[in-house]
Length: 78
Image (cartoon, rainbow, N blue to C red; front, side):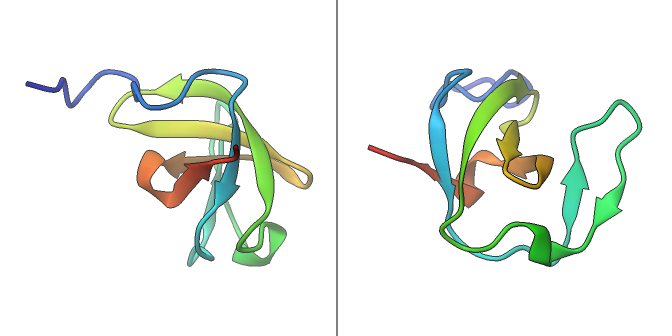
């Protein structure tokens, strides 16, 4: 049985990922998170996983910032 509260096992820190679809908003991965407009990251943009968070959340660094995304919103780049 999978642990729902632990970090996402499908991705490792340093993994290259691609955003699968545009988000309604982006949440920064800062210690005090802020909501940002969705046009900072577009569908298909690639980023690097910099941190694994609980509940299958990833902190992903893109060209225009580091944002929190659910693991099912990104796919690995091969």
